Every structure is written in C-alpha cells, then in structure tokens.
Length: 253
Image 1 (cartoon, helix red, strand yellow):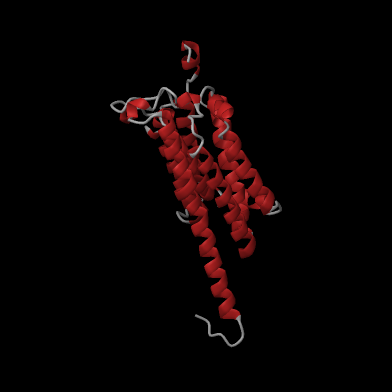
Image 2 (image 1 turned 180 degrees about the vertical axis):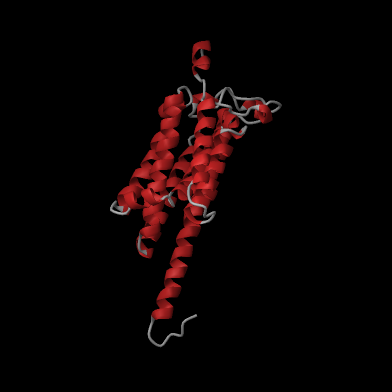
C-alpha cells in the first residue's frame, strides 16, 4: 500500500492508537460536545419525569458519549472488531432507546414493518461494503452518514416493532437475525481481509487483519444475531401465554 493510501485513512475518531495509548484518546470534538451538552440541557429543562421516554433519552445520551467521546471511539479506528461492536451498540441499544421518542413512534406507525425490516438490514449490509466502509473512515461527513443512517433506520424499525402484533414482530425479528447472521458468516469465511483501513492497524494488538475480521464476523454471526432470537422467543412465549389464559376452560395464570 502506498504512503498516499495510508494517509487517506483519517477516521473521525482519529488515527489508530497503540495499546499503550488508547486510554488517553478521548474525542474532544467541540461540535459533538456542544451538541451533547445542548441535548442534556434540553432534556433537563423538559419534563421532570425521570422514567419513561425521558429516562431512556438520558440513557441514550450517555451511550452516545461512551461510543463517540470515550477512547472506544479511537479504538474502533484500530480494530474492525471494535467497530463491529460499535455498530451492534447503535442497532441494539441506542436505536431502541431512541424509539421511545413520541415523534419517532408517530412517524413509524403508518410504515410497513416488513419494509422497515428490509431497509435497516440493507443499510447494515451496504455500510459493510469495503468501498463504503473505507469512505466512512476517511471522511467525517461519510462517517456521520453511516452512524445516522444505521441508528435512524433501526430506531424506526424498533418503534414500529413495538406497535406490531406478536406474529409480525416475531417474523421481523427472525428475519433480522438471519440476515445479520449471514453478514457475520460472510465476514468470518471471506478468506481474506476486506477492509483496507485496518490492514496496518491490527498487528499492534496481536491480530492479523484477517483474524480481526473473523472475530468481528463471529460476534455479528452469533451474539449479535442472538439478541433478535431471544427477543423473538420472549414475544412468542408471552403471546402464547396470553392466548392460553384467554382460551375457554383454561385457567388464567
């Protein structure tokens, strides 16, 4: 790889840190910090309730700080595994918290759950195309387009999922599980390192670029996909229990 190509990777979170450096690599972007401070102030001046949507939004702000301000942000520049965990946190933690926002709930209500399922999974796959992934780690604008599109599409999906009938919700969750797992399996068995931004950043951490990608793929294939499976099973179990309690001659539990 040429020196020009190496210099092209200037991630938003900064260049890849060494193991001895990463705990010192806080992201002090003034625009991001000002936005978080403004959001926290608006939340504080709003409703006095500390539970419900306000409580979830407070948790969401804290999670954003962990993902984009703490040293985890810079660590994602070094390891694709950390970037994968970062994406999982956006999809399975931040997005469900944001789904509690009443405006998002209202916007999602008339939308098709099937369409939202397809869109959020398609966006996940698209951003894992090597060319687009590389663009996100060489341009702040593309990086934030990645974060916002992943989180926004997933938040709409979670909001609609909360409003759906049990059967539709289970089918949507299982489809998301399968398609997310397929992407993880593809990364695991690709046979070569796909992501140029990490070709020279993983060795200091004791991993080859391919090993780093394989660990990330396994995480996406098993633990991440299992989140959707567990939730689908929980919804199915509760719906079957509710149906049994309403059936004639069956005592309610």
